Image 1: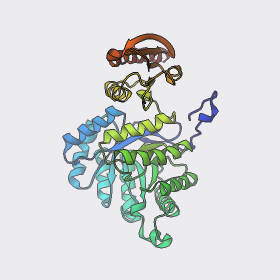
Image 2: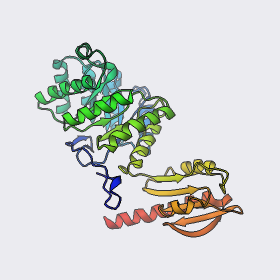
Image 3: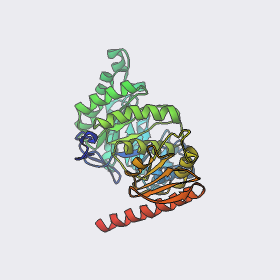
Length: 373
């Protein structure tokens, strides 16, 4: 829960859900909202897949999903799980035996789609495998692959059909005394997704995995995901998220964290507050921010940095950040530390100097955190 007693208009009251484990990552309850992504390498290329999993983990991914389309991928999954530093979710479609094999291979969670996994008997076999291997399940309802009887009943994919699909599958799991599951009801349409998620949130206490499926490329997909996921998270709905982009999985992780950071739900790395720049700027703001984003990627400590081109808003923004720089005149600007004006710095040395100040502040915050523990 994100609570602010001084500024109550920033409060987010998270929906109460029960908690399940995906490997060693808690999902639901009062656990932090987990960030997920998915590999796009051939699963049978173990080296490439492990490298992509590791890159995502270094970017902050808590959980990574891997597609398991065939038996060869099931065999490769065992090695991928062994080498991964984060829990692996096996993405299962059409072939229920892949779900059984993935559980046996050590997957932390099975993502199964009720629209294409098969009849209740086959689902039951997957449930038994998950139970035997301490594996959770994600029920992954997708507007593009709803069951035939629901499409006939409703005429088209709609929130009611997606919620009914999810509840039917929940019933199967619960009838088999299996409760270690989370659920998603994804669509590429933001309105359809949001309405379906609101419906399923009211109908079950299961943890909810959020996503706008097939959101698009880096820019368009980021915008759609920020609108759809951001509004649901603001309402308190969501226990884990995946931003689905036609882009590098690392970019999905970055966008996911930025969405959570903007709502105060997760904090990781440097939050850069910067102006769009104008004719008043005392230095090239855009190039400076681009350079700092790259130079500060290694910082994991939650902290804030303001980079403002002139004195119109610069001093005010710097009052609320750990480190700040405001453009001035004569080729230099003012460095702010802990909200107070500290010293001037020339523009040509400013980037290196800010990196040093951020690293120093991060070390101080880390030391304070360790002392508090």
